[in-house]
Image 1 (tube, rainbow, N blue to C red):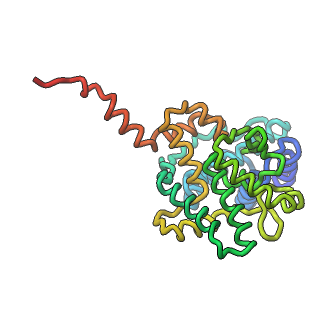
Image 2 (spheres, rainbow, N blue to C red; image 1 turned 120 degrees about the horizontal axis):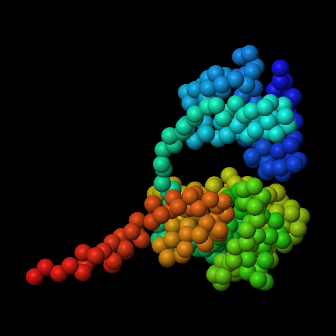
Image 3 (cartoon, rainbow, N blue to C red; image 1 turned 180 degrees about the vertical axis):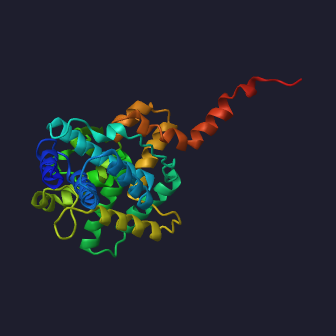
Length: 307
């Protein structure tokens, strides 16, 4: 009989040190596998079709389809590794017919005029002559954060993980390490964005060198994703913006607005760091303005004349 607990520990070591998976992925794997081991402990402990089927049923009763799909994928990958290591002869999931009906949810975007209002608010607050030195410095950082979010479409986790040498102001680009430690280079050509980053970098040089990360907090530690969310909430309330804005909505807006400007979707895929074009294609459903322009200007009915 297989000792699943021992094998799972070896598998997680393999994921960490050989596959070099990132911290968040490893954490998700540990949680998923721990839940699976807990379930298997209440059974005969065998990787049988009926046990795995019952496990999938239990997940569906507790979680949404997207979460179930991820948890099943984690265990399926674990079983695939057991086959690779000759612990078992066949992946038991190959005998299961599992389908996941995920709801199709369109990504939420921020209208360009609201982004403009938000940026104007942060610049205006930073130009207040009554600000303390600390408030002015914090404002410089916040401007750089928001400008970079919109300029590059990075995930908030990618932004907060930037190191000092990931920003190249001379050549105007930022190096991003995305999911699976995949590297991508994103040019920054807008002068306002470059100026904002330069001002921040100049003011925070010592803090950045001390911390190692590009964006730092008042304790000279890496700026957290939650701090960015609080920051956006603060400026949204100050600007009296009724829409709840999240950091990821900047990414969605970035992609959608580029698509509306006729940028090829494959370029957008590369900039966003999507491994599959299918992921990027969701933005074709969001771009209602582009659809309206097409139907208004290019619909064949425009060439039909009624006499």
